[in-house]
Length: 334
Image (tube, rainbow, N blue to C red):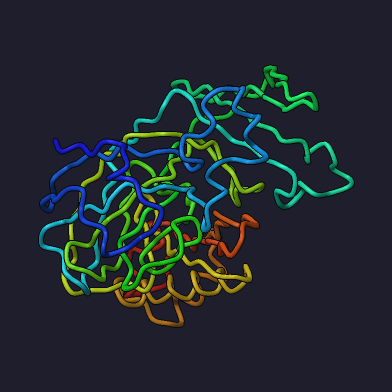
């Protein structure tokens, strides 16, 4: 199996069709990508908390954060196709990090929550099922105080950033989001999920990175449990059929994604695009699709990403259970 190592040639901070492919693979061929964590490997020990105020990657414009591995050239993929990415396996590092610093939104500059303005690094020890937290706090004398938090969180790894090269380059892989994918931070982009992405260049030119060991919806303070990983993927293609934005197919549901600000715009886009999916591929009438979203208790809106980070848009997923899809051409499913 082809494996791309984590190095200067394979890691990028933009989605750009001019990057030379790091590997070429065939349709149906499994391959492995080594990814770096979002802070570019800066925080590996508790003592690295001293770098929180002036990390090297924030001294660049745009910041050299959120590296992605790629691009991968998939043979047989052309502009106008939809790439189908199977996430076969995520092997994550035994250590992850999360952190905040003064000014980190939404509470890092709050008078009421003043203790959250202290630069704080949390090291996560990643086990088979849980992530165990240890806090490292920078002291006024430059030292570091470290102690266990007694906090255990369920391990739930997923790919935070996945994309193909858009028609034109974007500013950065941190802020880049669009129909072609990007920094979406969707917890459902995990093993077992099929990710459908519209393509704009020959070979698709696929990137992946920003893997998280665990994260709550909205990524509340802008950083998840960031972790290095080895991602195993396999690609198929739907020829000359586009989708308006990234779509997900899980075993029990389908999810239409959208990124926008304000939040309600993202909700409306994702929901309307889900209706279009039901109409185009499940032969559902517009009236029935409207009803399913309005009254069906199996319809969900997931707010995956709502971090107040620069120009990053909010990412929403409109999700409906597959049990509601049978018989849509006939009566309304129950």
